[in-house]
Length: 178
Image: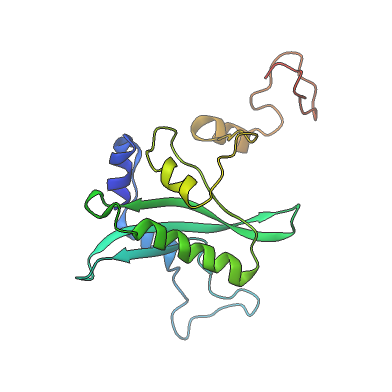
């Protein structure tokens, strides 16, 4: 279904996820019985969590993949919904609402203050999200560091992306040229 979502979002060429990668992210391997482990290094915990919606025949019709984030201002975790997808034949069935309700319940039960996600700007789900009380955030601008720029910064933190005239250790303010 992740590949179906990528196709829906007109980006199928960017989706390279394999079943093995998803399984590994959701269910990290634990050391084999009898394997030497250090006491302070327990088996890795999952960093990605998921819910699957199924129909009456127990066939998957949608999913939510999410992970924890943290608000330094509130001092508590929240949930970041990475992907929510309901197959076209099941849209309008309530599956999306139930998936979001499951995440909202986790937030309330655990004392998390936020359930957040991004949505592609042309997605018709905006009306659905508004109907459940979700508010579009406009004051925060998303940024992404990837590809060559990510590698350059990792390999050369002192000089990556530096332009002539930049001063070391300075973060430009809103008045500076970006």
